[in-house]
Image 1 (cartoon, rainbow, N blue to C red):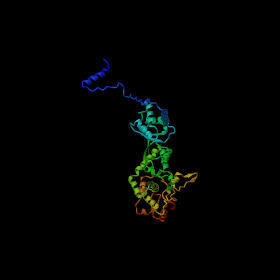
Image 2: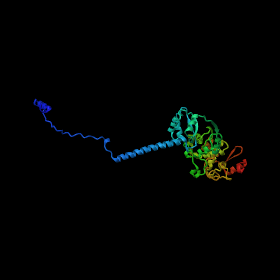
Image 3: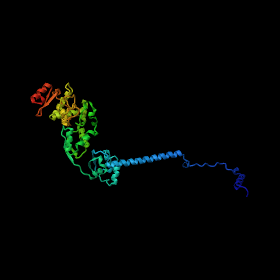
Image 4: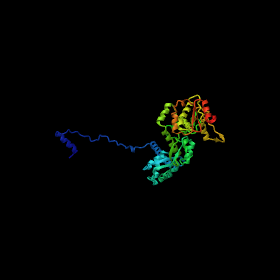
Length: 400
């Protein structure tokens, strides 16, 4: 049968009333579809390849540098090369994990990388072997000695030490070393160079502040609170001083601070005045009277305190240098106006209270002189003539 069968079929249907017949063109009119070339198959420009190569090189180099730095830092931390020998007390509590211990070591400046210490503990089989206790450690011990010390868990001895009221920094340092609490060298190092986290600490003047504080010998003289303490033997100087300052902070109550503020008194001036009262008053009962007389002088035409104890402070610290007696105008209140440059001892609670709350006795409020005899009696005078007569009568001082 000639012709296209499909075409003939369509014609027959059309003749019988079906769909109209439309002759189709034999030629394809539809355009061929365009092939999308995948992006990854597109040709790359040479410039882009070069940039990517440079970036890759930099990243690899940075990673290598970071790894090298980490390794070097880890070695220095592990071996404790050039680390400080300053001792710090660390307390490990029962059940503390290696992570907690590592964090404590890091916070106290004993190690730089807690994660390396944890890794060392794991690889050396020491993880989980650390014992509870308080340990005196230093950064120059290195990982092995630090971990060994905590593993051994050797209990530390304690010693009870009483620091008398009126002791100077020098006497306290010698007393602590004598009782094996800390060495005088470590004590002075902490005293002169360490910072402590107390609100009052930042406000304590130093000789570098100049003015009335020029020539001040020890910044913390007066703040090392005298009391009976329980110390760990072989403690760090910083730990010991922190304990003394903490006690001072608690003894100067909010009520006392409010009273100082109301009277316009600076804490450091109170401490200096208290240290003089501690040395000049025969008994604690006389302290408020002594401070009243001294305040009277400061607020009068006399202005000079003229207290032997202030000049004696320097004489006790530095009796002679190259055979010459040392005279410090910073502490000589016969020549100096106002308070000395710093405290002359570490006063107790009664003396501090006396400096804040001087006597309100009507007679004492008019006195500008006092004198102590050898029997423990104190005499108060309103005028210099009365003072001289009293001294002669009871054979006191240069007038006796």
